[in-house]
Amino acid sequence: MMRAWILPTLLLLCGSAVATAQVLKGYSVAAAALLLVFVLLAGVYSPLIFPRSVGVLEAQRRSAVDGRPVVFWRPGCTYCLRLRIRLGRSARQLHWVDIWRDPAGAAAVRAANDGDETVPTVVVAGRPHTNPDPAWVREQLFPSE
Image (tube, rainbow, N blue to C red; front, side, top):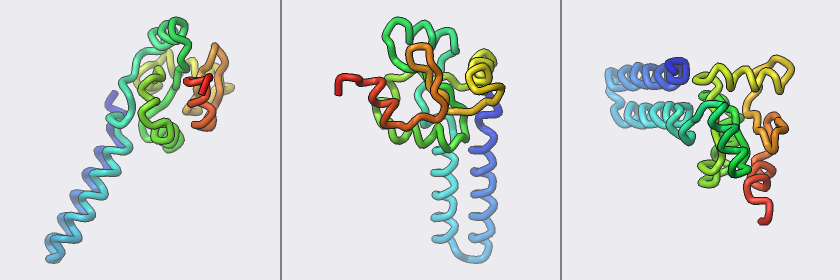
C-alpha cells in the first residue's frame, strides 16, 4: 500500500521545495502557481482518483454475478489514468484491482501477459485484454448503447 503513495509524496515534496525557493527569491505568485501544479499532479497520480479497489477474488466473484469487466491497474500508470479519465463516471461501475495491493491480482496479470505486469489489463467474460481502447471498454460495460 505504501508503494502507491511514493510518487504523489515525491511530487508534493518537490513542489514544496520549488515553491520555497521561489518564495525566498520573492516570487510568491509563481510559488503558489507551481505548488498548485505539483499538488494537482500528486492528486492525479494518487490512488484517490480511482474507484475503490477490491481483491482479485472479490472482483471475479462480482464480475461473475453482474457481468461487468475487471480492470487490473496500479498507481502511477499513465495508461491506467488515461483509461480511468476517458471512462468518466462509468468507471465506477467496473471492478478495479490494484495489483500493488493484491499479490494475487499481480499474479493474474502476469499470467495473462506472459510474465509481465502490464496494466491496464481488462478481463471481460474471462478473457484478458491488455491496454484496450477506453471506448471498447465502455462498449463492454454498456453493450446495448
